[in-house]
Length: 191
Image 1: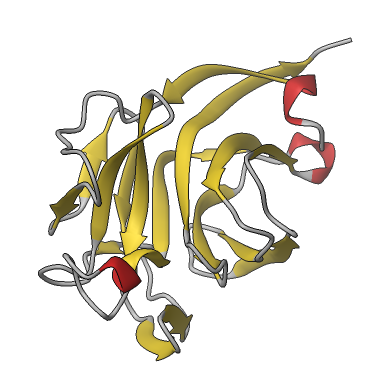
Image 2 (image 1 turned 90 degrees about the horizontal axis):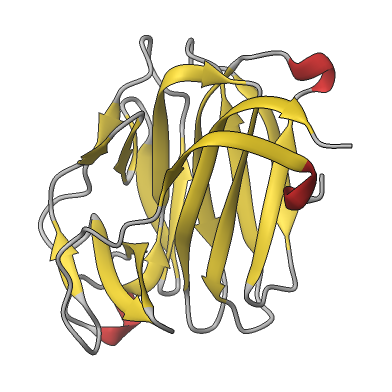
């Protein structure tokens, strides 16, 4: 769904996350923000790898619970084009360049959502996979995005059903990707 056709009352932009220049900083624990928690994967899932990229398999356990990936393999924050973005660190581990933006990134909302939107930063014509989960760990849908570039994406449930408890973002982009401007708590459609 076009991201600009949705309206939201919450946005998480990561500009308050401490970061450094270059490959950025590492975040080894889950990152808690107002309305959402960020990590590597959900409890019950297993991390594997394909080349430099994380591969997440398995079914989340109930209740949906966020996990970190361990030291140097969870999340990172970096300055990119005038903003701070959040990305997953892959299995090659921080501070290796091969890890930056190539790890998985999971988001768990405090409340189930009918819609959400986010910006993908980076993107060099690779692909991303977004898997949406209900609170009981069941998969709502899996979508492939790409070829990737700097872009914004919006998602909404049929009949505005509020059952998106979280999502998992994976990628196979040559330079990795980052997440910015997560928008949620939708309240109606414009126009």
